[in-house]
Length: 530
Image 1 (spheres, rainbow, N blue to C red):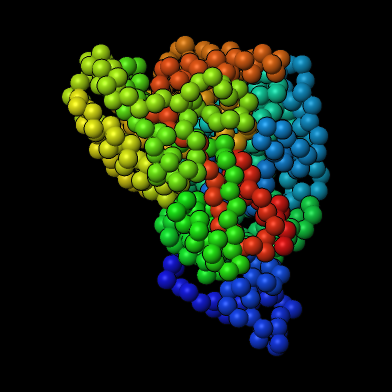
Image 2 (image 1 turned 90 degrees about the vertical axis):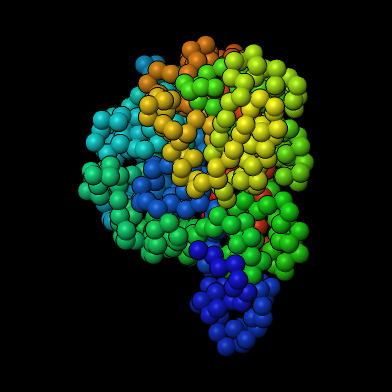
């Protein structure tokens, strides 16, 4: 973990900035952080707010995890939000007329253990995500792959992906979640007792990415170095250290002192600190991530639409953005944010109306209810403070009491994927963020709201589910956009969430790194220059 009290560069830090060419007078010229940052970077450190404790890249749908994994386990496609997918490990692909797309893979891709990537590997990786009976199931379930039905190897380097939606939508889905994963490696490392792909040593990782793991401390740090047999262009840094801290002050100190070259989730009030630090800079962008509080409607009092709407009217979203977020965000009243395909500009955020909230609570028949909001700390910008404020605002109602429980993000993530069976879950109201990385509304709604074949859903409503499923079959882009706008309007009315805000992504960065953040929050080292 990052040590917030460490204020000087040690020998390793100096060496990583100067590289092999630095010696004698070169080392003597390094004085303080600014001097170190002036050198060409051969090694960098990236500090996240949450950190993976598994070798399985499909263990959680968590942006922080993918920021690490995608350097090791390679996506098949390069993806640009709102634009689509582009060649990478997949050289070419073509939609057929029978609900399938044929994907041609490169023939020169090898895993870090030296084995060649085959179509069997890719087909199996997709199947384990959508088929829980495959034997090495993916914990992420069908989130993000709602229309994908399976995959089959046609020959050594050709995969056929089948789906039950319009080809354009399916392309967004497998374009984001198809990975180059070694089937034999996964089966060999599968821990049947824990139902997980397990490993504790650097050599247990095995991807095709431009970096391979050389050091691993579970839950704390992964160090990667360039993979010599990588098929693509050489990546810009010889070595990357990924670590994490859930404490915002620690991430700020890491950038301020030069211990980290890029830190995510900088708090608005800490922006001046980074800007005033020598050699450091702030980079920010309005993201595709919305923050909200799901209310699972299979449990009282959230089975009442009036009660769910009341919770929205109890909260002052604009006030939270102005005060807690320092203006770094936008109030939201639908599942997705502007810039996402299908966003409905006519849907306004709920405005705080205490009288209306209390009246709706009475109409629901749940006056006097006591509820609890579960929320993470350190995963999103000002997440704990936001949750505490939301709970306090609800608690101000005369006929509802609300407490807050701040927990590790894993607890919230597990609650989000636990489904809606009241006998199987004990958290019904929680705060989470969802990045619509495809740039398409379907990704922001189908995993939460569609009913058939979706045990991980958070909300049971046939009208909303049917509207989403119908939109998935529309091939004309204009018609599908209109259908998705209607889905967002319907979601606003049914209030499956307490809608909060779209998050601004704020990064503290070594100013020597030329890099602009992406709306989908993905961090790729190969998009950086020094």
